[in-house]
Image (cartoon, rainbow, N blue to C red; front, top):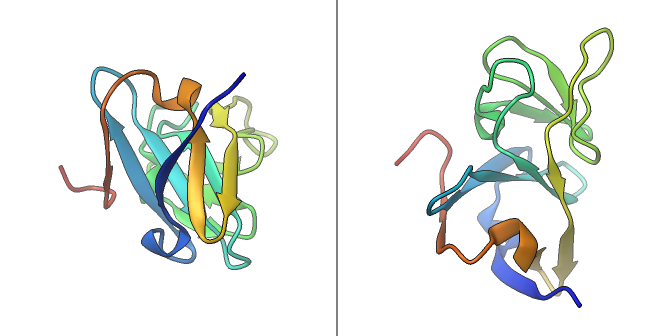
Length: 119
């Protein structure tokens, strides 16, 4: 049975933007919020050259990588053709304005919600 962990409020993620979940001892996650207030979670690394997706521009249900402008689908992590590759996605649940991730996404590490580009 999967355990859901509350990570933030929907309002903590800017509309058409992202927040980074910095995990101790592992790759970081990016939480995205689109114009329709849908929330998505991907590994914060473009499948092309590893660019930080959390620093990209969100539009529709996609994000543009800030390094080479690859378009990555927020719901699947797949790169838009003709590009190929996939960023790992994570299940997200939103309940009463709170955002939850499955424990497997966070591991046993501590995590902190941050603004992209800031340590």
